[in-house]
Every structure is written in C-alpha cells, then in structure tokens.
Length: 280
Image (cartoon, rainbow, N blue to C red; front, side, top):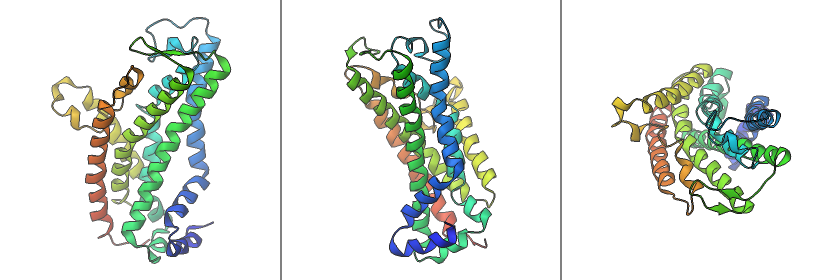
C-alpha cells in the first residue's frame, strides 16, 4: 500500500494506525529489529562456546550468564544502550518527516484533513512505538536464548537478595521499560531534525551524532554541572531496579528529563513544521 493510498485513512481517523502500518511494513524496520535481537544471541553463544569468562572482564553481568540465563537479557540491553539502540532509533526518528519529503509523499499526506499537527504527532507515536519494539526485541531475545543455552534459576540481586525466576523476569521487563523511556527524548530530537531537511540520511546522522555527543560530554568531569541535563545522563541508571526493594528514583528523574526533551524539541518541531513550505 502506497502513501497516496494511505492518506485517505486520515479522514477516518486512521492516521496513527496507517503510520504504524507503513513503519512495520518496511523491510528496514524488521532488519533492524532482527539485528538488535541478535545481540544477546551472539553474547550468549560466545559465553556458551567459551570455557571460562574472566571475572570483571567485558560488559557487566557477562560472567554471570553461564550461571543464570536471565542475565543474557540484561547484558544484551546493557551492550545495546550506548550505540545500537540509539543508532536504530536515530534512523527511524530521522526519517519521520524528511523521509516523506525525500520520497515526494509529504504533500499527499498533508492533503488529508488531518492537518500538520496530527501528522507530526502520528510520526512521533510511530517512533515511540519503535523504541518499545527495539528494546523488547533485545530483552525477549535475551531471555529466550538464555533459557535455551543456560540454566534459569532464582536471581541474586545487586543488594544480595534472591528473587524468584518470575520476579526476575518482571525486573528485566522493568529495565526494558526504563530504557524505552530513555529513548523517547532522542526520538523527539530526531523528529525536530527531520523537519529541517528533505534529506533523511542527514537527519538520521544528526540524530545519532546528538546521542554520541551527549554520551561523550557525560563522561567529562569538567562538565559535571551539565551532566544532569544531558539526554543520555540516566541511560545506565537502571541498576536500582536490581536491588531489593527496587528504587524508582532514577526512573522518575529519567522520565522527567526525557519529558523535558519531548516538550522542547516537540515545540521546535511544531514551530518548524507548521510554518514550512512543503513542495514535495
């Protein structure tokens, strides 16, 4: 189904569903999800084929995968946060508006009575849903391959307490929710950058660069005053969810920070897109 055929769906209030339909009909979307799902699989296979993982070497929890397969999911998420998840979210978010303009289909979407604001919201919702899909691809793949290759037992948390397998799986899903929230601000940045150009590759690259620069600045002690305001500052702050009782302080701080980025860059995207001359 083409964009020209999907545009009339906006008349019946189906703009959000049509956006999701287009996003998940793309081979690129599924290729990125499969690649993300392969990360914990590769990690688990590497541990399985290695006789011994030196303690303290490699990503956190790597040496615990052989003892409990659930740690394959946590390790996969931890490895994916700095680059792989931002990379895929940057591709989707940067393509939201610029991709339509580059294909020459943006004017057809705006011909529907939904309006620019609703189209902008639909694009962001599509990017947000992809954030959730990307994180779940890593988490669920990690739990599946971990259970297949290693024993699954009650988990000893960072606080020293032991929880059941069921509660441990809930903790993994909570971490997935935390990381999803962490990516929502980046999706808003990508949406704004996508309104600035008709070249989707440029918007994608710029969005990824923003995420990388944020992480670099967050590691400079000279800029400690800036750290709490950086997009990526709380990305790795989910360790408190692996304690008993779990602490949601970082979760709340992260949510407020991402909400701020959504508000600021959503407003910038709105200001740019509603005044932009659409010729393609």
